[in-house]
Amino acid sequence: MSGCRFDPAGMPYPDDGAVGSDGEPAVCGNGSLDQGEACDGDEFGGQTCVSLGFDSGDLACTGACVINSMGCSTCGDDVRQGDEHCDGVDLDDKNCEVLGFDGGSLSCGPGCLFNTDLCTGSGCGDGVIDIGEDCDGLNLDGRTCATEGFTGGVLTCDVTCQLDVTGCDTCGDGIQTGLEQCDGTDLDGVTCVTLLHDGGNLTCGTGCVFDESGCADCGNGVAELGEACDGADLSGEDCTTQGTFTGGILTCGPTCAFVTSACTTCGDGIIESGEECDDATANSDVVPDACRMNCMEAHCGDGVCDTADLGGNCPQDCKVVAFADDFEGAWPDGWTTGDQYPEVWESGVDTWAPTTNEFHSGAHSLWCAGDGDQTSYYDNNMGAWANHEVDLSGAAGLDVHFDLWLLVDVATSSDSLTVSYNYLGGSNWNTLETISAGTSGWEFRSYNISAAAGYGNVLISFYFYSNGLLRAEPGAVVDDVEVWY
Image 1 (cartoon, rainbow, N blue to C red):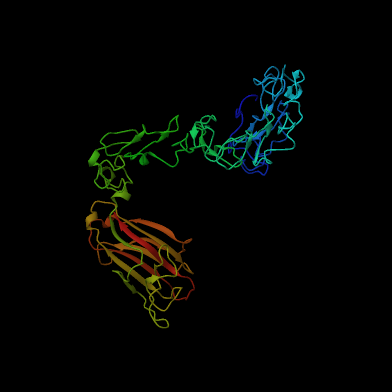
Image 2 (cartoon, rainbow, N blue to C red):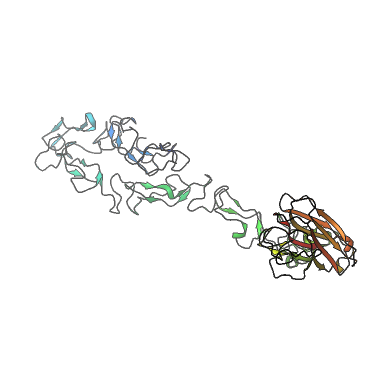
């Protein structure tokens, strides 16, 4: 647009979701004209000062990939600009005498060059380089900014027919000159704010054009340099990182600063948004029925046996483990074993013991044929048992559970595993389950043995029976045994 230095209106800033010709996100500054960019480096997509409505001049590309038409001019609009000497009645306060003539009337001619036809005498402005003149009008004698030691810019001839190098520049010398937008730290007083951003850090990029990647625009949903947050982008922060808060909801305000009004401090004795209770120093994660340390009411699953959890209402919190064995420790560890039919086969008697052949967890389980010469399959003529005593004297009046994982793989339905318990002694065994058809793999069992609640010498038992035929199956395996109330 004529007479203005920057024209970013309507153009997207880099990295706004546009896609380049290679399918990758558009990146301003890669020298390739991507979607959403008016220009990039020396690439203007065929645009020139002339195609933009000017008569002449050179386009420049800003760091935001927006066309800068500062170097363009339109001869005939009565506004002298760019490399025009004059335009209409705008003679830049020059006259024939200033141009080296004796007198006369100066006017603006074609191409917005001075018309000295009515000037008297001869001198600067006639387009001919005379003695003492470096140039005359557009006649620069083939000289450019480069021939004068600069790296770029536009060389012109002043009204005294001397070279004007103010439009030349040397990018990298730290001084903003000519058509440079900036040079090093010299930003010519321009900031992110003057470029219509909300803030941030403007720098000078390649080619001495502005690098606006450090500028921030509050409201675009991305927390940028100088912004604590932006919309839902909280930069990974939450209420707990904002001082003494312990919870709540951190939000971002309209100025991209944190809003902590919905943050809470559990333990201050004030019930705030999102808190169910707050008893200050009385909050506890171990005291039954207390307000918890996260300011939530005592509830099932918080690891504390509260009043409301008793009576079987919350087994996971009020669970008392009377006995547990995962068979990863020393053996026999209180287990007693034997074989009702001690068939001597080859070199020994087979009964229950730990094995690594099969296991539900860890690396061991309890196997019905693991204590003799068998290695991975059960013996014939077995009547092997494994018993363990459990004290349930503290469980009077409560539900008692006998849990375990088991795997049964037998060759015939004549062979079986029986799970039982005895709380009265003698032969008073209570069969919980007999499995003769095998299982589909490891299966969980939970038996109710509340009849034994309150007794101190309760026996839990595994019994494996096999007939006289030798088989190649593993038999019965149990793991992760637990008795609880």
